[in-house]
Length: 237
Image 1 (tube, rainbow, N blue to C red):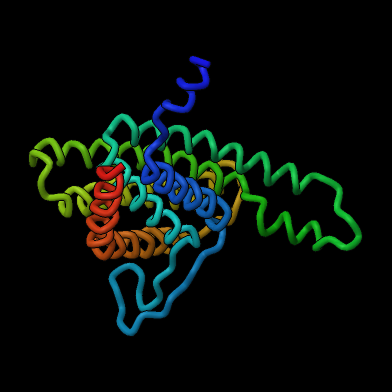
Image 2 (cartoon, helix red, strand yellow; image 1 turned 180 degrees about the vertical axis):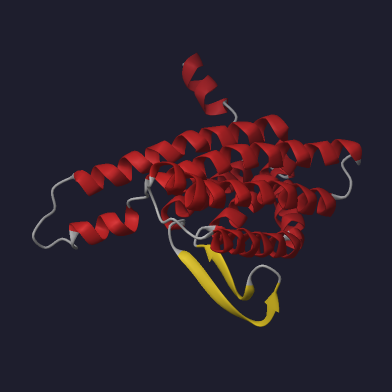
């Protein structure tokens, strides 16, 4: 009887933490599966290094959502909890890869989609996996350190500053690491993945970072909205 009462009275995880962790992991898995596609957007004006076409990896939006969720999580639940989320999700990357590749390698039925097409679309190549994993681990942990460094320096004030500054810093590192590893270093070193010209690699870095920086500025009101709503909800529990 005592154990049953103890089980019923055990505190549950905050709903906000579960929701933000879910968004974070969903965005991370999506980024892993969409990183290989290179997007191109025509601009009405020319930019230095990119010209009038903005090129960026397909995972750019998913990664921006991931940083948004991690900043909200760090603001609400602290540096230690955010680092746990980031590092547990890093391990989940490998689970995604195992599940995808187990499906790719399993025998296909006659009625199935073409197995080669399925592998081409979902089977992340070595260059993409290496780039995304290294970039993720470094940039996400950097984001948490910068976010909480600014929070401590401003006595918990200026949420907008730490959201933009931490994301701008860590997203730059993420972008440079991912693009250079996936589309330059690995193809050059071991011949795996598309070997893009240096100018294209630079344009990918610039295009992806500009989008992420724009999203970091635009999502700031939503960081206030989400963190405020979760605080009010959890205060009333």
